[in-house]
Amino acid sequence: MKRLDQVLNAENIPAELELVVNDVIVACKDIAFKLRQGDLAGILGATEDENVQGETQKKLDVISNDLLKDVLVSNPFVRGVGSEEEDYTIAANADGKYLVTFDPLDGSSNIDVNLSVGTIFSILEAQDNTPGDNQEVFLQNGRKQVAAGYVLYGPSALLVMTTGNGVNIFTLDTTVGEFVLTKSGIQIPEDTAEFAINMSNQRFWEPEMKQYIDDCLQGEEGPLGKRYNMRWVASMVAEVHRILMRGGIFMYPYDNRDPSKAGKLRLMYEGNPMSMIVEQAGGASSTGRMDIMDVQPEGIHDRVPVVLGSKNEVAKVVAYHNK
Ligand code: P6P
Image: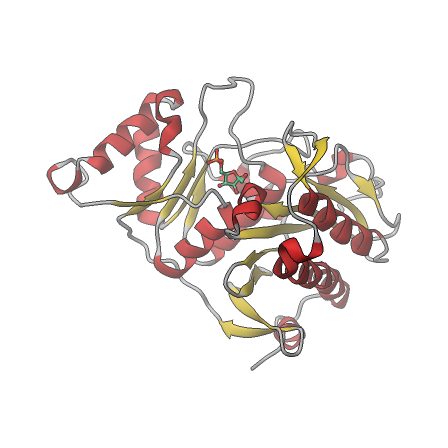
């Protein structure tokens, strides 16, 4: 079985980028170990604090964020980092080339009920000498990513990542503490009959999304002519992984609960990295009206509507929005 470093070497990526990826993975292996300890390590439950998103921080949100931040800020090839848990971007090294954004523990509402959570990361190149504590240097569209990945802390800890050469899956071998290649060249089935959406928000959606879901629920007799199944794990990393494995469509659309927000999910460290992975695996990822990776960010915490997965199903949802 090939180790992560052997696969990255074969992909001919710059040595500095490989060292940045390795530091992300060092932190994620530590997060995986802490999650396995759970209550035994006294690290479950919430803090008294809220993050910039207005969400109560779980203890493990803070621990995971600190692990990733500390290891990356001291990496000589990192210019700066941006995190869901940090109000502002953080400067690392003025002559570092790489910018790393991450959601340190996505789906953390699942932690206290022992369900899957994940770490999502995205890597960009700084295009000028702007310091890493100026968010402007991060504000590049998703097509500029040089690497993206997630670690799914499920029954096994899986690293799924791409450097633009397809999508590989690595499994954490806990006997040696290394991620080893277990699947390569992932391809998402182009069609699906399985959708993932939080149905409790239905009354807040735009008419186009309501119509698509209504038509799915009409099954074989309806306009889409097939019986759909539904899943909702409330952990984007778990949903995306299921889609990579068996196809599907994941949606967190715009809703009018807070009209000032374009969506719930964040562009820079959820939408863009997941979109790079999904497109590299032959899927599609859209806001419903345009490719997510073509969206020009205006702030490190920008939100975006997300419709991603099997490309022919995403095309249907886009068609509903373009009627
Ligand atoms: P809801 C987790 O908080 C997250 O950011 C995604 O991982 C997940 O898909 C979504 O929010 C779940 O949101 O509104 O169903 O709790």
